Image 1 (cartoon, rainbow, N blue to C red):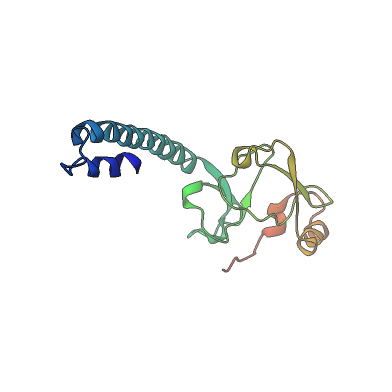
Image 2 (cartoon, helix red, strand yellow):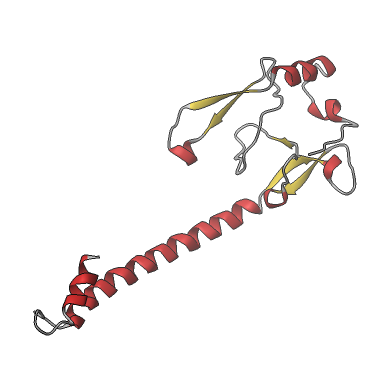
Length: 155
């Protein structure tokens, strides 16, 4: 802002100390450099987002048009609110996920948020007690597919 107002003052002949061009050229160079830098960062973010959105996840098929009672591969970009997603160990998750049940009897899942906040410690996520208990009661083998057969999801 300093260079902008200084450049405006250079148009007043009685207080002019230099050419307005000599004031606005450095300002223009700084602004254009910043714009180019931001454009490069936005393009890199666009490429990263496109790559992430094209990765696949396992989604419970009863919400798909074919109504398959199984987990089917689907792109992250096609994920909808209310979809049940099966996560495996060390899998990256580019969406907000609610833990419904885990293969651990205690219903605990450990999440790393290092890419979001830089913190390397694992965060503890707890499945809802009622759902975890029902999952354990219905299927002691740890296979969520058997537990979900015939379930309809409505949002």
